Amino acid sequence: MRAVPNAGITGRVELSYEFQRRNTIKRYRAGLVKKDDVCDAEFLLVAASDFHGHPAGYDCPICDSPRLRHVQWIYGDGLKHASGSARTPEEIARFEAQGTVFTTHLVEVCQDCHWNHLLKATTPTPEEAS
Ligand SMILES: [Zn+2]
Figure 1 (cartoon, rainbow, N blue to C red):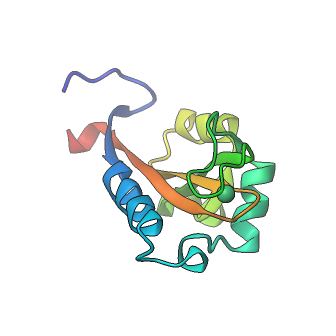
Figure 2: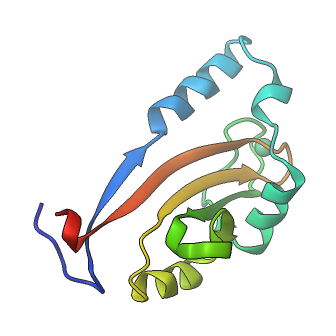
């Protein structure tokens, strides 16, 4: 992988959860899992997606609501108290510019039925690791 130098971050490892997501939706539609089991977003997650997130641009796969949002959560020791919190893309860009290494989870959350699923986990690869 050819790296683009950017504040000590040379690349990214992306892990897609698209397969698991499709599988969960398929199982729900087949009646194998209950709505309560897939639409279990906690209050904090729903609120965070409203406050820090942005519209997904497509409807909820469970209830067809257009109020489906994408929100990013960040995790990493270098983030200290910010680890495990939802952040806007601008805040995430600021942490990256500081050279902080952390994992970003992109989550979709429905404001109506509370469906939620991890879409993607992204971890930057620092220079010394490549
Ligand atoms: Zn929904």
